[in-house]
Amino acid sequence: MARRIAIFIGSLTLIIAAVFAINYMLVQRSLSTLLDSDTRNKGITALAYYDYLLNPRSLVFDLQVVSSTNSPADIFRVLLQFAASQKDRDYETVKLSFKGQTKFLLKGSYFKTLGVEFETQNPLYTMRTLPENVIKPDGTAAFGTWTGGWLGVFGKQMEDFIEFHKQWYINDLTKAGS
Image (tube, rainbow, N blue to C red):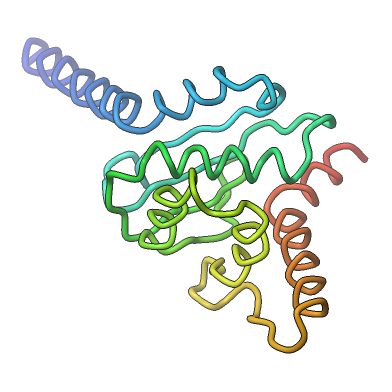
């Protein structure tokens, strides 16, 4: 009986190690590499893994640390760099989390578009239009789509961009610092 338990525990350990290794090799390694390769990313720590470590159709981008010297533009750049590193993969959903808590979702097709267009799209355009593509965890739109004169629309889109970052991680950082 003790031998069977030992074999079971050994097998379970191997399976768990394999799951972590797969997540590291397929998603975390590229995120770690891009964080380390760009000095502007100093102060940002993030994890990337499959949802529940087992669902390769759903990716989690989980911010862990954001230093006081990092701006929303820095976090946005890392998200875009990561999307570019994953552009050859298809996901149904990408969860945007902070310290393990899912705050928002992106459709996998939109995340792929961010990655494909990373080198060619004007980052200001991507910054302005990101919030209208963000979904709350309950499946509803997190932000609206603005219409009207370009200056007014631009201003509202940038307000939404900042509010997105506040809701994603800044508000939690502010509470932690209090």
